[in-house]
Length: 400
Image 1 (cartoon, one colour):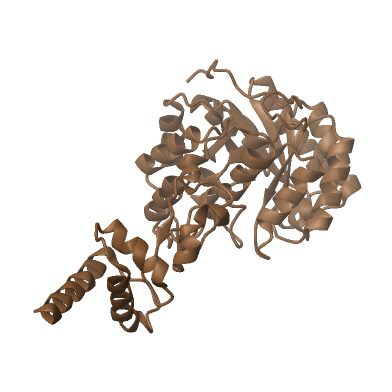
Image 2: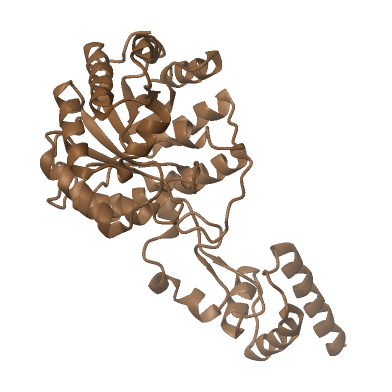
């Protein structure tokens, strides 16, 4: 399959479209690679295709859609997605352990229609010893051969320092410079094993960004729960690409979740071309497809992210909400629960089409409160209607 001639994002530090004067930060999603290969997660070909469609609709710059040189099933997924001719660049990851793999893996990447490849090779002493059992110099030469071969094929080439967070920074700079000389388009700093606090991430990315002639990407895992914090710290320090997955799904504590990074770039870094309105439905789709729980208090996309139980807060919700819930595909809700106050009950009655006098509102409040005490969750609309019917029946019986 020939490479697409579509207009693909470049990596120049252009400021066009940001409106902030800051260099443009680009976003790559690796749900279809990192999350799909996480323990216990399975996504069918049709589900992968649908996820790719929804990711593209968000305005992302790149979608990492699978593995180079995988089996027939993997190649089928990559080919099916690339046939969509989506706007974002599509890449696949090549875990390069020996030179003999290079030609076949890169041929597979090109044949499935990917316009880019991510060459991943260990860079920390621990991972080099575990996976390669060769010297640092030999590891660098392996990377250069793979990067040069990918570049010669006309592929966009990102090369990843696997476990870069535990590698020596000076040696990592030499490694990344060698990759750039071989034809690499960007360097991925992969925190494969969570090990850095945000301040250290900021320092290391700052040194790399200042020393390299190509953009730096940050890719984090979240064993300490710091993936989002580390990703934003890296961006502030000069990273020009960020990697994430839907819902943070991934190995070793998960990855950086897509929603907060996308919203950060959209709201605070001028990426108005991103389309966050599709976030909630995307997250729900992936959670259902992967058979994973969807936490209702997840920021931005959770069902309870914009819920209220106090009527006073509900009435002034525009003051409490930093952005319209609809802008991320969510909505505000008034929950019928034990903390519901008179003002909230009035709002519910009005929504149900009931016009109540002040005295009737007092009676309804007195009727509902004891029936809501002790509930851990609010009641649904059907149960609320039943309670309102019971209240009206009691009121009419008293009047008779």
